[in-house]
Structures are given as C-alpha cells and as structure tokens.
Image (cartoon, rainbow, N blue to C red; front, side):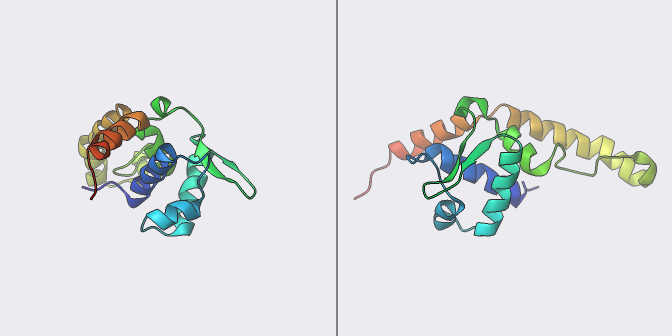
Length: 142
C-alpha cells in the first residue's frame, strides 16, 4: 500500500515551509530542492491554500507561508487538503456499486481509511519538524 504522490508532495512542501529561515518560499524554491515538477508543486499549494493551511504573498518577495502554527497543523489536515476524506475505495452511493465493491468498501477500504486517518490525526507538523531537527542536529560534516 502506498500513500499518493500528491500527499507526499504536500507534506514535503509543508516541511520546507516549516524548516525555512525565509518568511516565504516560492514553488521555484522547493522545485530546486526536490525532484518534483514546479507546476505540480503549484497545484499542491493551490489545494493547501484553499484549505487554509498556507497563505501567499504576491510580488518580488512573495511566496507561500504557513497559515497556522506548526502544532496546529496535523498530517491529516495536509492529506485531506489534497486528497479529500477518503484515501482508499470510492465513497458514495452504494446503489451504483456492484455487490463485491460494497463489501470491499465496508469490510476493507473504510477500515483502512479510518486507521490511516487516525495515525495522521496524531502527527503534527511540529512533530515532524522536531524529528527532523533531532535527526539532523546530531550529524556533522567534514
């Protein structure tokens, strides 16, 4: 099982904003650090902005910045901003689904969604930044 590339990209973009010493970052700034399409990053930021996780400033020193404190942004918020509330299966009207799809949705996909969302709900951007800082503050380079 894999988390979508869009969710991974969104979390990576949010980490870059959280770790940056600049007031704002552009899609270009992140593009230069990541192996991601600049256009794709811009689409992800549009979703994050629509959900109130980031704000933007236009102009020469413009770019994106976090709209909330790190401790108030959960991984779940980021994933829902780009994916919606369902990661596995197809939510919706059961009358249009086949019998097997209905069983899989209720017996498997809904349970997977619940478990994954529960984990994402207990990890904040602050937790991820702290883990990053703990990991890389102990490294030294020669």
